[in-house]
Image (cartoon, rainbow, N blue to C red; front, side, top):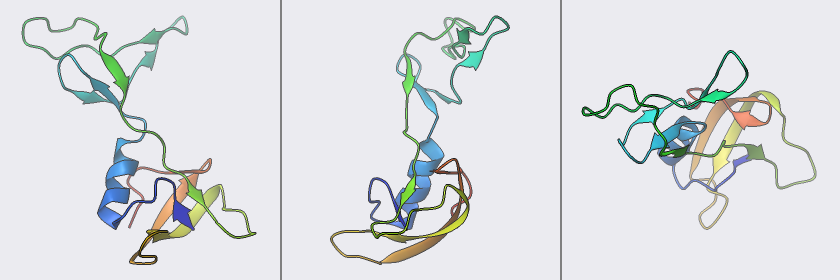
Length: 114
């Protein structure tokens, strides 16, 4: 199995998985888990942590990292749930590192890369 994005090192894979699904505020420079669902189903942006305006809803929030998934270049499909063994990079110097991770819904679960 390989990870999308062809990370060159295991450290790069761990960093990409940790960023997946996080949100970044361009106004205050903070990372958060992103908008939360309100009682009426609307999205509530995380509060801005700037000193001069604490508690103001942050309008500069953008998605920081895309989910990292696994794929198999051969005829056999990659599993969508469970433990997988990942190798990389795929190109130019293949198989320089190996890792194990947990996959849920086709994406690598943050914190599961070993």
